[in-house]
Image 1: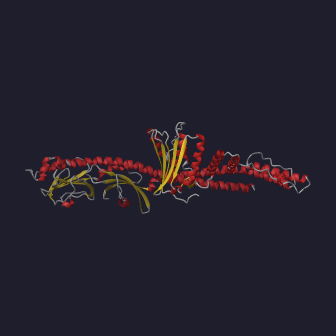
Image 2: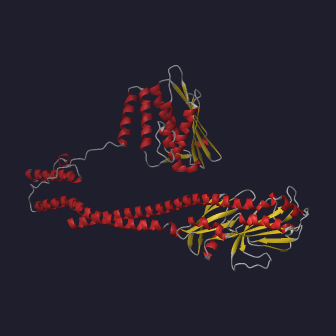
Image 3: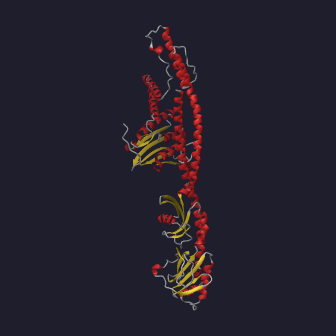
Amino acid sequence: MRATLKLKTMAVFILALALSVSMILISSYYMTVNHQRQEYIRYNSGMLELASENLSSRLYQVLESSLTIYRDDKMMNILRGVSRDLWDTSTIRDSLRTIFSSNPYICQVYLYSDVLGAAYLDRGNATAQGTAGGLMPGERYPYNSVSLSGKMQTTYGFALNVPPDREVITMSRSIYDFPGERYLGELDIDIDPAFFGHLEDIVTDGAALAFVSGDGTILYSSAADSAAFAIIDDLVLSGSSGVSECSHEGHKHTAVYSLVKPNASFDDFYIIKIIADEAITASARELAIRNLMIGGLILFFAVLAMAKISSGFARPFDYIDRQLKRISEGNLTVKLDIRNDSEFGVFARQFNAMIDSINNLIIRDYKLEISNKNNQLKALQAQMDPHFINNALQNIGAEALRNGNRQLYDPIMQFGEMMRYTMDFASLMVPLEKEMRYTVNYLNLQAMRFRGRFRYSISSEDDSLRAIVPKLLLQPLAENVFKHGRFTDDRVMMISIASSLRDGVLRVECSNDGEGIDRERLARLRGIIDRARFTDEESSHIGLINLSRRLWLIYGERGSIHIVSDHDKGFTVSIEIEGVEIGPSDS
């Protein structure tokens, strides 16, 4: 018997412990994964915002250099066609050379003059000149607008050498005769993609960094594989920053992006960082393996401990088994010597009483007729339970009524009804009508204490009484009046409780015309109650705080609590529940 009980006890314990450890490990893994993902998003969002500011500053410098043409009156006169030196290439060369020299990542600068019908290309060491067709009106960029585009570097039709397969980012703007709207020409500045390379220090763990225009065109990408381009193509970018989850070929990825906007002239484009979820959760998987090993060790030592504990647990059974064998051999003087308050101690006392009864039967010559009272086992000590309390209150109330004391009978019955209500744990959600009845009993009992220093009124719409609400929803509202309200002998306080149902929104309001609180205390109390959903901040208004937490846990954003008060203008607490369930009327 001992071995069987021991094995069963250990099996149950090991199973329960294994399930508990497994649940802890699984929940810990998913919590860790979620935490790491949120930390990744938070960290990289901040990094991308810094990178966006940095890049905006660098692009703004290039943008400023493109305005060199507008600042050079001689150059502008040439583009307007009003200069005596229309074909003064030195002026054009110097202006383009100034733009080229403003940033080491500028590869070449292209200028088209609509008046001259000529084009110029400067690479720092030489300026080429030739003829070129202008942009059609529909192709021109709006006034004071700058666009970025990615493309392969070209010679713009000039007979110049160009590195094969060299990609560039082109900043384009149309030139107009400011402040008029006459089109003068076109300016393109080709920028080496290495201009963005200094930002790649934020790329780690196999992540990809890309720069994408507002229309989804990829301007630059640190990843050369097609997967990164496919993921970028599927992204929907909006706002100044954000996070997007996406999948490609069965693998999940997380993309964090931030808007780059040097000034209002620039078209929108975004910095995007993409990383596979496997990389984000790698450390979580390593932690899960370590936790699994630790859990195995815990389970191993727990089994050893349980073996020892179960041995101790089975020891009383061995002792009882030996004593029973002695009784079966005819020794009726055997007693169980277990003197404690455990289940074994109770069993031993009952068993010894049984042996004494058997011995008494033998001593009395096996008389079969004996009083049941002398042979019954000792009854277990009765426990006081809610039914006993309720029955006792009913008996006391009945006795008061028989003695003609109606004033004592009513509060006893009301208190008994409150006891039944609070001790009935069959349902945690009840009709508002029951809550109203409970609150009326509570106010009547408080009336005995305060004796004429307050009055109350209850106003409820019939439909609202059928609303299903959390149990003990109203007591904190009424209790708050007696805990924080100031009752005086020279003034009767009025307490009003009302409920209504409008468009599926239940509103319950408890107000009094007492002293109220000043605006500073009201603001502090509102803040504590708002924060009560997420913190354990202490306050004397513990009832309202707990009520706010319950509403949040049950209804989320659909449940709310509001407080209105001012000094000497009373105190009002209202509850609103959207989409409340409506049940049958409680008759």
